[in-house]
Image (cartoon, rainbow, N blue to C red; front, side, top):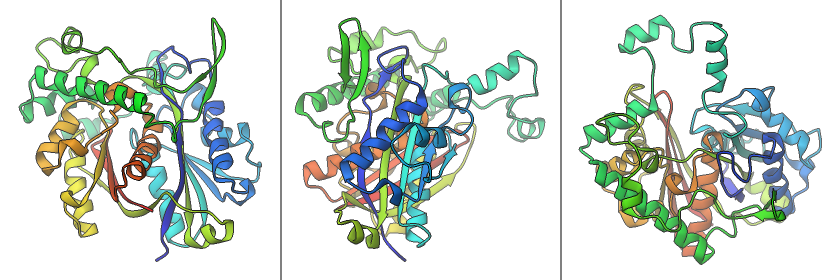
Length: 390
């Protein structure tokens, strides 16, 4: 079987809800990272055989095939096809896996995996809420599903509370983890750790046009007292907005190529795809599936958790990476070393390729070999991708 290589990996700096990126149409925001992939790699854009784009809330400006619209808004020729996919928070991580599978199968040689989400312009759940408001349909969960699992709906917020209680994490432990996320993200910015992955985006400000290059959600002056003062999402609970991922606007992209294409185009890879895994489990607690998914991925790869040099585990809610650490026996000093979604934001469909951009650049910057990325996803699904720095 052919190998699949990551040649470029880029992302925009995250924008807060209603913040610096809120003025960008999502198709144009996606076009920025597609253009950056072409510019930075130097590849002939006509050689790109497909663009696979993750997006969760496919409504409004993100409806009518956002992936194709991002291509049409970019410098790529109209001959480049695209597809838009939804595996919830793991949408663009799945885009990476689909792209890698196409290359490894020999079906295609040059594929871009990408993700786009403007949570300012297309609010989370608006694809359901607008139908409910108009009385159209019964919602996404049929009576058969509700009866099978004994719930009226599936909620990531309820799942996060369930995880915190199941694994015995206190509010203080969750807040302490959130503080570390901000501290690590702030340190990463100050050290220039994100410079190779971030695509500058021009934004309008009261002082005129500026380049947006710093993730807007990072609290450089974060304190445990400040985080602990944030209201809980439910009375008697443990989850607050401060120990959960931030609503975020952003886009990201990864160029994946075969060895044959690398030679033809004279390019050198950043990393090699080593393992692709996806699993599914309990859709009610929903968020703990990265734990068994990681075990399965490591077993398939013939590896142990100690063989992995860096981990990116999406910080949807603080209990997710904390439970993952405890159950896998992973080293906390290798986890989300440049901060995570609690500080940097979680632009839903864009987070998979965003985390991969951070992971491969961190591996190379630190002279490390193996990286593992995993993500909890709606419906109780999880993707795991293991890469080897080139």
